[in-house]
Image 1 (tube, rainbow, N blue to C red):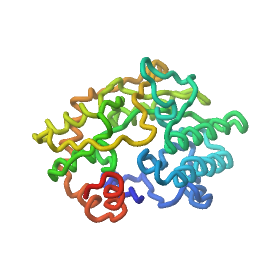
Image 2: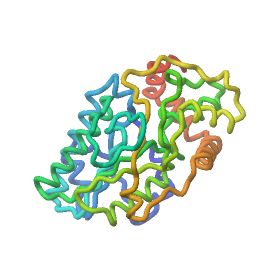
Image 3: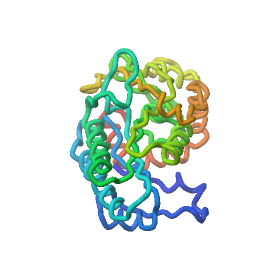
Image 4: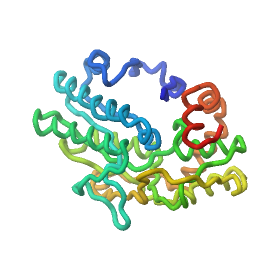
Length: 299
């Protein structure tokens, strides 16, 4: 599914420090071109949506594992000084109580989280075997402006603006830790600059919320009625709770600046004020429309 839009980069398109290269991390030629002359590499590229991974697992393995291999090979050839790989808290699996530490074993539940675990393990093997200066972050659920409307907050917000129902899995009591995108970026920049090579850093805001409560919070902000909630069959292997211990990154000097209530309002307001951006995706991209109809039975 094509989730790339240059509209997201309009604010920096005239910045002399910015260069856009369209490519594929699975292509050695594209990666060599993009990485030429770089001293640091930050790998955000991935297939990321758990729901789609259940139906299209091979695409996730191809990008999230083989793509990381291509990146690591080129980074090794170019002798970069830092290689920051962005992973996810989902590699740990579910935890009923307490918080996962960076040293806990990985227990991924979905093709998505398994492919992310494979990619980060491959990247760390390049540190051990070749001395590639790899760092890894495992971040909790991101949210904020410009998020593609297949994720919970933008999907539900844009659906409700259109007075369409919102699909809640199961009983809606799955717990996620919500991390505002700007806090995430500050954490990644700090790890890139001050993190210890070869180490892993959990990144989470401590904003643990039931999915159903997040849904009701969006409804309240938009003045919509709870009858728009549609409970749908839970997805296979749905993890109940994610929670990570963030003492390690906090010791570097990071802490989140956004509490969830303020961050959610800021995010919902952004989608209200930027209808042209998300309507272009939801109405014009055939692959998006086909996916939503296939997954949730809604149009």
